[in-house]
Length: 257
Image (cartoon, rainbow, N blue to C red; front, side, top):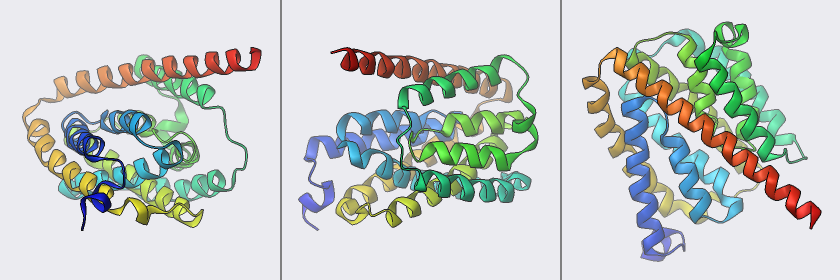
């Protein structure tokens, strides 16, 4: 395998940067429950061609979450898996067939506000009682937006699980979602094979990051984990709101210009 195949034509500095971020982002998510996917998405949005961002992020996150789900499999809260899967199938199918691109600014602001709502108030009934609805809605959004991990984490938070169960359950649900999304983009014609070497590198180093993050998770107590989870969710929500507002502002300026 030549270096050109390995880095997907991006150049060595970019490929090595993404590889390091894949390790760090997986360590963050395994250790603190959430946050790494958004870090990876932000890096890809900066370094990859626009059409490749969402499909490649989904596949890399599939590898990262699969490794995390496997490491914590014994602690999975199994009752939500099948309903989430069925809802996700519907959400992915609708999202894949949707021909109108949703305004990313509106989506980001809406997601950010919703996540903040789940932190500061009692979560809505549909999140507490319907993993199928959560799976369907978040899977529909992930086809356009990509970074719905915080939304799913907000749902898992309502289950009031222990820290290890939380990470295991969130990883499994995100594995389901990213697997279905990857299949959908493949059926829609995205050429994953062109990026094969880079994908393998990112997934491999992501797994190493997961192993490192597991040691952090097993050493942090429940109270600190909940504080860290709420803090990260809040920061990610504020980032979503800010990014969405900037997108809407730029769109308004372009329309006016």
